[in-house]
Image (cartoon, rainbow, N blue to C red; front, side, top):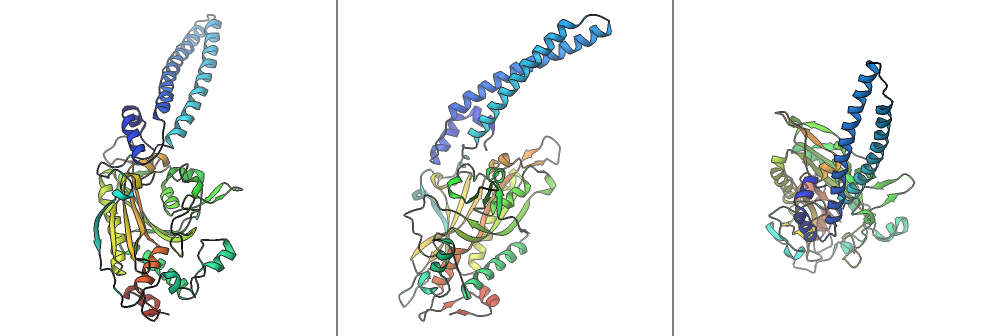
Length: 418
């Protein structure tokens, strides 16, 4: 959520940011409602002053044994009018709040304008593997351990069912990633896999992504689309001390997405599924330190890929490719040898104070003064389906077996999966 002072003073900047993100907003409607609210507030303040004056006059007259009927009548009439205006302003406040939920965050100044074609490749690592045989995609290499048809009978299309070494590989990766994050100073969180509407609003999944989420209507709960939702909401409506910052968290969650609007995109195999596993990284930061934290989160994710010996590249996303809530985002893409293309495995985002305003997450400055909003950041560390794609396709051997990187071979108890 954007600061109302910003909406008031720089409406053109807000409009330009929305255009850059391909969002449609009506800032003029908000300005009109805000102006009406401020006019009402002046009237309310004047009526409150009059009511206080009348109250003092009634008290004085009664003390002096004088008749105060006229002042009491005027006080009641003022109260009735005041109550009516307060109800009106409550309606305006609700209307303003609903409009504000649809205003996207403003991209940072260094974010390039345009769509994904304007994303900037900042750096890359690793050597694209070369093979002396025809490489296969993961759905061929995993035909006995990845069973989409069986998953379809159970839950429908685009769900995952692993068995054998694939199931064990997924479990091993989750455990290894959580251990890695703990070793670099993050606190592990085990959070609910469902969330209330208020939680979805705080992290800005609602109202923007409503069509892309699974909802349990009977209980008015959502299946979480990402671990960012429950982990960040741990601090919704909380006031921290400045000494408490930064807060470094990580956690495993399944993620549920309807993938509405993704029809026509490549969804074969594990490329695009409705439920996937992920380890999430979340940071709550002092505003002066969030840029540094953004780089640290990026390095955590890329360090893991280097340990897994997976070639990757880091992109700075252009404005049209940014999420609704992000001010700045790095995408990490990894190489898929069987499909010969780059696949996104993590998005590392800095939301500045956008989510904190929506979720009322603040800190009290050490030197005193009024509470300020924190900065929130998060990123996948890492998402499993495409990570498994890359491990399997890049590690394939001519006989169809899969050679594992040493960090996984040690945990799996084998160097080769057959």
